[in-house]
Length: 381
Image (cartoon, rainbow, N blue to C red; front, top):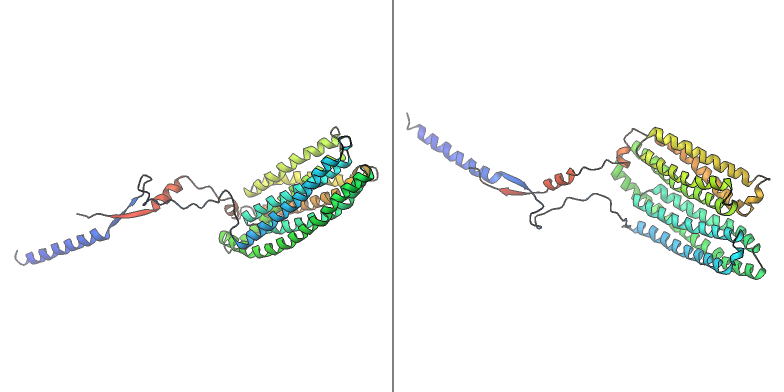
């Protein structure tokens, strides 16, 4: 009975040894990497965070950045040179009304050019096509504003002092009349062309982040328009208030205090409006819309006073430019409120995860390190 079973047992033993040998070759167990291991075997976790300093990396982003930088450097250099010449040519006892107007005009122009440069960097970094379009319109507006303020500056120069000084200052400003509009016109054409090229490039980036969901892309587009409007609101509100504070009112007036307080209120309102929309806080955003309506009421009163017969003399030196700034501020604030309502209607529909992604936990780094594995073999006995 035992003899026929021996070959069978021998065969099964040989089969077990062969399968055990195969398992010893097949089973490989990963060993997690440790930070103390050799640098040749250490693999860092991929870094998906946005770099601290954005550098344009494509042809059209570099072209747009180079155009804005060149335009800003040339125009700011001319405006600064004229502004410094005013300080040297005007006597101390005559730096009251007229020179203050000239300095406010030129200072506001310099601030506008530098602010446009900062917005250009922000638009390229965030790949915001809407903001790039707004910058092209803003550049055209700077060209228009420069043409409109020519007559005001000429009248201010003529009313300063004697003919010799007036002729000298007007000769200085002729440089700005000729060169600055030329630079701004060329810059506007180049920026518009590069924006058209960047539209397709940024659309592909949005497609990768938002996916092909048409409704989600429309919600994201509404959010981009809203953020761009807030940034341009700040410039025109600040420009209007700066002209009022430096040209029209004296420091002891109640109007001066009220208009000075409007600047920090506006900055806080616009900043909080962006944050509340990003975090989808409906009640808080509605409160910010109420503050926007109050700011619009202040600009409405300013426009009424500019063209009122009783007070028009106080605004004679800045009537054209202040009317332009106040009217644009009212228009942009109205568009911002309308767009804020559209953003509120898009709350709780999945956009928040794209514009305000949750922060990764610290353990995610260690998990990524553990996923970077190297195999090792050992025999099973």
